[in-house]
Image (cartoon, rainbow, N blue to C red; front, top):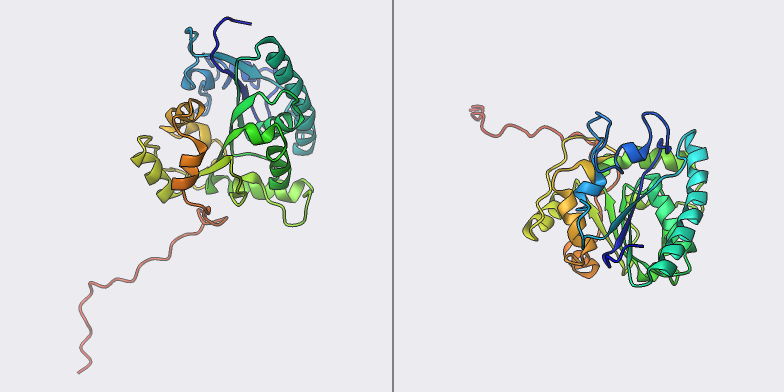
Length: 281
């Protein structure tokens, strides 16, 4: 392990990726410093997180797992991948006990991260950014209330742009508890977790006032907004450096998220009020 004592940042992809698969290898795509794909959403997480190979910035690890196949198969595989990630975290803690570990995950990758936090024995994970998390709230709550989970500062990045994906998962994947919702619904409140709703105007204004301007949403439906939205990665870097503590974000961000489907509702047209009054005399 390097003598650099910076944090170990572990990046975890979501659905459809598989290491070594032509066109779907995460190490050639979003988890690479130089992605080879040409798709609009193929941006480099390592570079945007400030991992440029310089001393002092910490170590970046891209964690690949088999997220191919059906959504049922991938959801089940995410649990096994989480167990493997927990073992990796514990091994890192043994080799470098003075280096904090941070997790950055998208979609089903957030399920992997949550499982790893729950299963890890080392309690070395200090921060987790969960983007459009494809996991149920009850499972996340159990993990984050565990001894290792209570030590993690969690940023839950949600958006009503992701409602369609959350809704489909809730219909396809059996709920652990009645009326359970995906974490992106935004109704889970924990002392060590802040929820940032990326399409909420008030939330964006709070972040802009704090010095982190994030672009407004451009689509009604988007699963990749939490890492594609211009201005979001400076906020992530600040969160991982404790420049934006969870307690501060919880105090200033809205305590409740906008209701599901609010982004898909078409506003009613306003009545024209500047027309001349009709003479009824």
